[in-house]
Amino acid sequence: MLDFDAGKYAAFVWPAYGLTAIVFVLLIVDTLARARRWRRAAERGESEADGDDTAS
Amino acid sequence: MSGFGVLLRRELALSWGRGGGPLLALAFYAATATLLPLAMGPEPARLAAIAPGSAWLALALASLLSLERLFERDYEDGALDLLALGPAPLELAAFAKCLAQWITAGAPLAVLAPVVAIALGAPPSLAPMIAVTALVGGIGFSFCGGIGAALSLGSRRGGVLIAVIVLPLFAPPVIFGAGAIDAYAAGLDWKTGLMLLSAYSLATLALGPFAMAAACRNALS
Amino acid sequence: MIAALANPRAFMRFSRWAAPTLGAIAAVLAAAGLWLDFTARPDYQQGYTVHIMFIHVPAAWMSLFVYGCLGVASFLGLVFRHALADAAARAAAPLGAGFTLLALATGSLWGRPMWGTWWVWDARLTSVLVLFLFYLGYMALDAAIDDEARASRACAILALVGLINLPIVHYSVVWWNTLHQGSSVFRADGPAMPLSYLAPLLTLTLAYMAAFGALWLVRIRSEVWRRRAAVLALRAAG
Image (tube, rainbow over all chains, first blue to last red):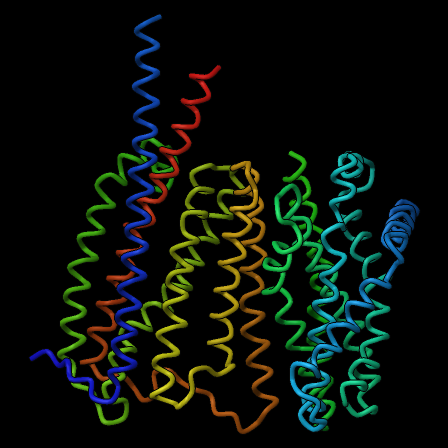
């Protein structure tokens, strides 16, 4: 049903799909890593602020 | 009007007095033009074919040279603050800066351009067309370059950053100018190309200062 | 609805469910699109290379669509001095650059078997290349200015200048190509597209758009957290 026989065009088609996959993976990983990093930083900051407030 | 005259005279003095006026830009232009045959090989027919385009390209690059200091000196010593707060609008000061840069660097480059092109093998009959397009295109390069220079104020790595920002803006005048020269050489309609180039240069002249002033105010904030 | 999103808290509430939802939609559409892609029968004109078209056209469309989003966000940030709009503009740039890179690369890989050349200086390809250079310049400017507010405004000015410039570049190459009569204009679509091609194309385009939406929202969320962290650090120090 799914036609994967690229014949002589394999050298063009598969690198195209491969590159697309790589770029998407990179964008997703970078986006999620960035989000995790700054979320942690914000939450750390908030817990420190809360600690200070209750202390004073 | 006299306010503008004062601004212009100041800018002319600044850009001319800076290290031998246009000599640096001219020398750079000649140097890059010299590198071309070394890179392409001396075969006359091939060089002659790309001569006008290469001369035009090297012109664009040489125009980038004096851009970094266009606003930066005033920014560093506080003169830009005064210009921003002064009676004349900052847009006018930006206009004066780019106009002065065109007069002291762009115009001499435009004079050298046909010489460079002929040295690379272009037919001498193209000389007037090359000079005119270089003169008109030079306005576009100065004012677009000014936008890049103003945006890069207060950032690190000024010179290279300006080039990266400005190159997409240089694409239309390079295409229109080189295309006009090409058309002229081939006996086709060159007037359209020249008009398109002029239109672009006039647009940058009219609109550029607004972008430059906004960028300067941003840097000063 | 836009006004409701303008409030950072409202935006965080909205994006917390919207981003994963869009991500899930993107995954489903991608799977469906790829299935439609590889069950479509290649015609005799294009051969198997039509499968590259299915991932090239969405990428090319996205490169322009993201540019439009970046332009709108820049305009709103500049005019209304809105930090969230600023953040949205700067968050979109790397995504746009990625799509543009894919458009250029897949286009090249498609062009070689289809028309025998890796590259041609026609209006469309040249404009996409200049667009890529614009994205790079935009990201370089953003990285070069330390102060966030100043960086946002400088980038916004550059974005608006670039927005005016891109159609001019496109037109200039169109004009330049008309000078050299005899250069055939390469049409990416060729004859009218059969339905069996339209389905995977549209599905994958929607998948790309959903993916962009999800990633964009998450990147803006990162910006909100980053600013929050910075403000809290300042308060803790002072």
